[in-house]
Image 1 (cartoon, one colour):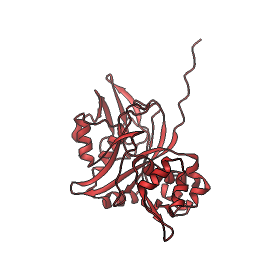
Image 2 (tube, one colour):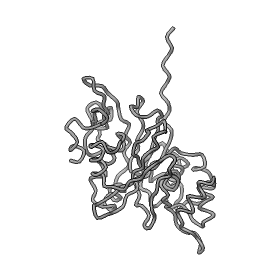
Image 3 (cartoon, helix red, strand yellow):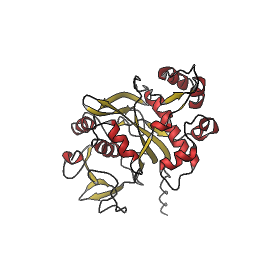
Image 4 (cartoon, rainbow, N blue to C red):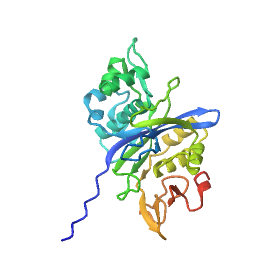
Length: 293
């Protein structure tokens, strides 16, 4: 008797924060390298982020918001996301920024407040919850710094991941006078660079990227400054992108909304609508330069 195939895993809600800053080279973004010992996306460079935790939507976190929950729900722009989910995702993005790269997006609520990112991260690493850390330092969450940017849902048959996620990407300007640093546990190195440089290093085999990062960097490459990127994100609802996997002439690929193979006809992103696996890389059929066109 043949066994029935298992149903696809339900994607887990997650939040990703795309931190950007202006530099002499143009807009830069922060990438972290995942530990090579991890089961999921080992050794790859990613934006900071992680899965939604129960406490992200708890009352203690809601009490430290700088905006009402219904405002965050509207800002997320998803008809089926209730206020608790929308709030939790914003909180998760801020928590992951502190946890994974030591960036504290917060604002003072009292005269003796301490906007001390390294100290806040130590308290978090010692086991305090994010809301407890902020309350102890006289801070509240700066959700106004976050702009919903895109939503990525892992395909049913993922090529690189062992788990499925429903990840909301937020874009935010990195806090001035704070230094991003990987945690030496989940992530082992950190890199500020322009989107073009990241993609060129990927092309040359100097770093590994997964397709969502490739497509997001190609998108981010279109903006010269932080102000341009944030204005563009505020000017539209974040697109939902659920890639479709396919095989063509023995080659594996991903296609995106707007592609002839994809069930969603409206294009979601600038740049190519299809990536093919070429050895260790995923690249457009037209070649690498199509990512930057």
